[in-house]
Picture 1 (cartoon, rainbow, N blue to C red):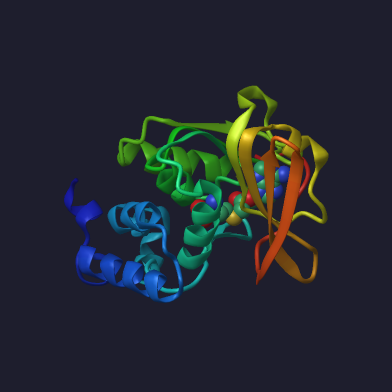
Picture 2 (picture 1 turned 60 degrees about the vertical axis):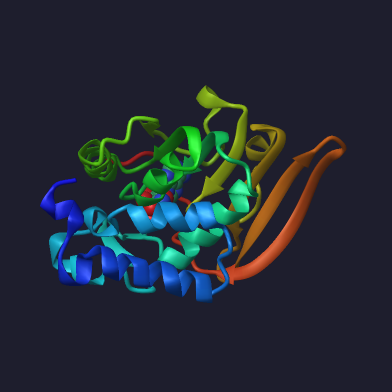
Length: 220
Ligand code: SAH
């Protein structure tokens, strides 16, 4: 790691370990997710002016009206998606944003596909992933409203933007035992977990969340 990755003061390893300690106190039990988040320098993914807030319990702006999800949100989504599988063979992320969650996923999965509709964000994410030498994440400029057929079937799908309902196409892209985690709702949102079992699909409605909306179409 170079010195920027190591960080100092509010971007140091100690600050990151404190973030992980808080996540544990907030109920995250998955040691593999926590270990990955203890390692990945989150401050690399935000503007330098915001770097000292990168380990706070909050979402932060990343430009284009989008946000990097709060640490607790990322940890919770990935804990639900992983369900103890080490590693997850293949994952799809919808909404790359700055690429932070995709980088955490790169430590939990063998192969990660991540799609983003805003090309400028993808360019930045690509830079950060290269800087951190992440090689098992494939980024694609695409509208993920209906998932991404190119890599299907997936063992897990995580959507980082809220939709009004679960698109059938998304659950169809799950392989056997696959898990889809996404926020559902317009004004009030809830995390929903869809599992593909031998007998079909099960759906669990979980806690209230607050994500940016899933939007159609591509943007430069
Ligand atoms: N995964 C990010 C969170 C990004 S916020 C993190 O690590 O913090 C959600 C992202 O979803 C935004 O960048 C937004 O542009 C993107 N998004 C919204 N609708 C989309 C769509 N239809 N297809 C792909 N990406 C979409």
